[in-house]
Image (cartoon, rainbow, N blue to C red; front, side, top):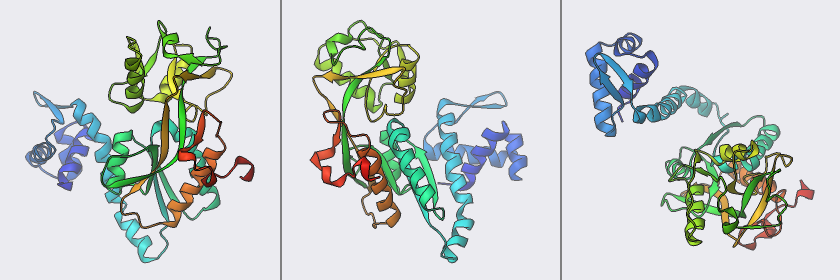
Length: 316
């Protein structure tokens, strides 16, 4: 990829015009325009709408701005990283998580490492399940946490836990007093779903399809966290797992197991050619501890019955 073209794209997006970008980069306006055209051709994306003499970001352009910024920020860090390597001081852990389990499992594990190892630099990012595999496969991160197994050839997974899908209800909902619920019980309810193509949405669609139940999602969102908070605010109900909902206030929402039982598995995702980094092993150990604290028979269980790999919460 042409890095100069990438910088030109960011400059135009930041400055709002080719004129501003040319001043910021000390280039002529035609040179900036050529770099933009080169980048669009290389990416096969239309990054800007050309309206008279104005450039307006397209939806594709807005989506790419964040990634361009991340790539360029990493490039800007290269001199500092090189200095640290020469001084043999570099200790860095790059972690990525699905949003679904970031707050309940990954953040506490990262915080523990940060407290216990003040000499380690840690980055924590959020990615969708599909993007998570791609970025770990490209070795942009050292370790990820999300749904397993994985399909990408450049990554491998280690299952740690499985969680049963449940119905998340407002605490005052008329079905909150039930011990468990079936898909048929959800008929006529305001069901909050994620956008099409996201993993939890696919799981929900499969549940309703298997029961031959037609449903219309009037409320849709980009993350399970937002869906859960919409439930907490009385907007409807949703389907999620107990591990992902662990940080919600039990005074505002309740979880009820869904019948028939459906399970989702979570674990760590690593580059295929992992070199056994000590910090990665430490992160896995802390993830196991966080998971162990949330085990619940019949609802949140060790993956594959590997209970010996999980440290009981009493040992923390």
